[in-house]
Length: 153
Length: 182
Image (cartoon, rainbow over the protein chains, first blue to last red):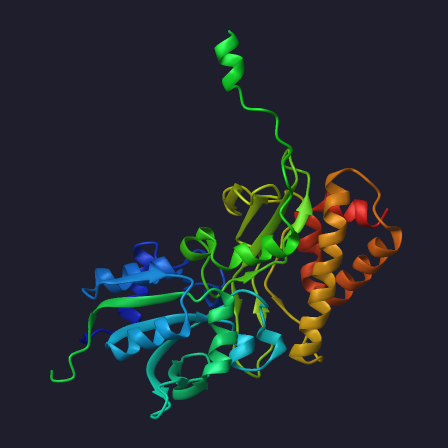
């Protein structure tokens, strides 16, 4: 799975179709998307996806292990350990989950790997406890692609 | 006539949702999923009687968050009200269509840095939530409530709500602030 499309293309598409906010005079305040809108953008680009809430760490792990693409909604303050960005009991930032680590003996989830556009970091490890706090405890929202990646492509 | 009276629903006293239930419901409310952009900052819900029955009002505003950078928050661009009985949505509007106040014009603000730890912030928020949880039923019942609790909540809101955002909160629920500060 993968499309040759630029971020600008997607932003333009989202703005034109009302999938992101676009009417603030300050451009920095534009571009916000909802979980449903993110799923719709992916779907319209030929990557069917759906949004759900109330997910558990095992739900998330299962989606990653099966090869689905996943974007989750987190509390940035918890993820970055910074009270300035802590929204308490709801999410305020989206990150992509790219991998999962399990204890090889017990199968217990040790953590996940994420790409975070807020920090610019890729393959950042987030342990299970932090993921529970930053994601599950604030609603467990995820946008999941219907299809799975084929690593043989 | 007798048959109709037998099947008539008896009057049932409505139960207020607790403040913690209201907050919990917010996490997965369909409004959050389908209408409020994830990056938006969502206000603390505050009590109001402005909509015909006990309710909690919120506003949301675009926000820019980058580590090590002061948080910027735009003017509220949407607001909503949920019923304190049952949590159903009563009002939702974009500010460009119907604003929650005709009296003020809000701009993008830079929020002051928070200097306490996350744990300290959470503890303070828990205290605020406890006070709102205790006072909201009194406010809804048009009772004065405990004067010390009102004073404590006033003080904590002044301390915890970022100064640049306080006018927005006051404009959202002027009736609650008037009651609180009486």
